[in-house]
Image (cartoon, rainbow over all chains, first blue to last red; front, side, top):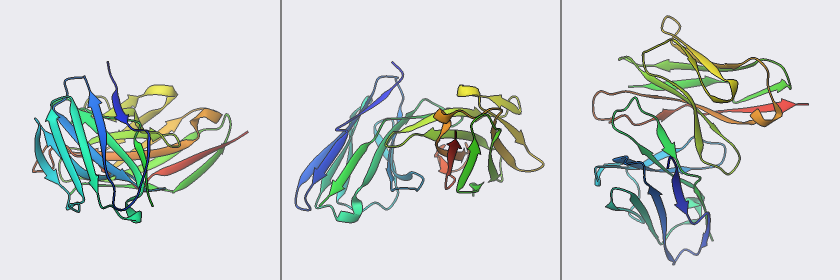
Length: 113
Length: 116
């Protein structure tokens, strides 16, 4: 199994809603990432988990809350988002050393009304 | 600090023509370099990577890239474009030093259009 899965594929939420994005991989990768991608832009790094511990938080607002319950699963909890948070949210994972590539999931298209 | 510059935000070629997408990097240490492709509303897929082995790297879908240290470049080429190659292409760099933990630093991307 060499893929990263993400659910849901699409999500529409209001500014007062609470929702979660889910990412899963079964490749034994111990580094997992959340990215945000706006249209016609490269992905922006949000969070990095290494061995289930949050190692990097790129000054992301607290309305985004990551969670890594186990080595295969990564969640991103969303609360009180703003319309400008609408974007494609990508999850990725990587095996071992930094010369290994990151494997990306298909993304969740989020629209905040 | 590492960075990459992709020259040309949009490249248009005819089907069957040579594809050349340019990437220049800046790194104070030996870099690891990657090319990713993104089709509309999809995630990123690795095309190829350079990790200090052979300087000419072959990837999927007929793409290849040559690492040129003297020019700090890692341009992506394909001899003959197909309609299915139309997509966004990202060059990225990472390193194994300091606190970056191998995080990817992306260029701004180049959109490739293929005309019939």
